[in-house]
Amino acid sequence: MRNLKIIEVKSELGAGTRGASMGVEAIKIAALDFGSRFFKKHKSVEVHNENHLLLESAGSQHAKRISGILTMLERVCDEVSRTLKNNEFPIILAGDHSTSAGSLAGIKLANPKLRIGAIWIDAHADLHSPYTTPSGNMHGMPLAISLAEDNIESKVNKPDQETINYWYQLKNVGGISPKVTPSDVIFINVRDTEKQEEYLMKKYSMKNFTTAEIRRKGVEKVAIEALGLLDHCDIIYVSFDVDCMDASISKGTGTPVPNGISEKEAGNLVARLMQSPKICAFEMVEVNPTLDKENLMAENAFEILLKATNQLIND
Image 1: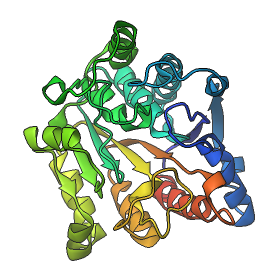
Image 2: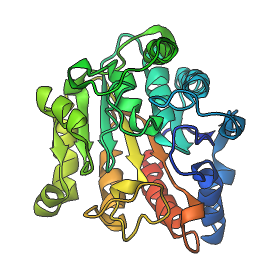
Image 3: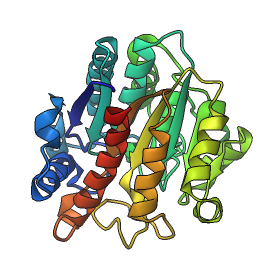
């Protein structure tokens, strides 16, 4: 049994669509509607956000609001590190996916000598940098930040010096870079990528369990295989973006993608992964209730969250 601590990160600076900062509250409302005392039972803390920057210029077209993203990553890093050092298990509920680079930085800061694995359950690989991004939205960059990967070989943009300087600082949040290596990252259900990301996935032979593979093998076997591929790692972080689920389900998120998994498959997958004693943190991101009807996305997300945390509490 582990002591859980909920870390609320109501930031949406990295998203292209507004509303993800409301995702945490939407999940809380779902919990109330289900009659659950989840958020009453567990200790929680809210990381102060910089969403006021949404009213100002986005700045660099190749890394929008990068100064605010840096501030958020530093704050998340400190909170996650503090939580782990206090022997608590971080359950990070965040708006857009960009701040997950802060989560990984915090895990590394708390465990500088340990080898960290990452299981990235997402429709997107999030491997872009300011040199490769087609949109400039930084929720497509957290894994590249954590890998300290510029992908200059696939360069299509020419970011200005200020952006380059901020990008360097992002990669070095927590004072250690990189936080993870490509061989220690496992993708599950990634299916919407650009050629620059595909170049890196192929270059480093990064494993991606596709929807077809999940259906063929079943979530139990995929979870076991994913954990097995990271057996050489000391600890493992699980990042869950709700857009891993099919677009018919994940309407309440900014970037829904067809051919995803079902909410039942997602819940069972996460529940099985969380049985591993190596799992050190769980993160859920990108619920956007402004795009939803009757809070269905948050309700699905909360049920998956319960399945994940029940494993931790029961074990």
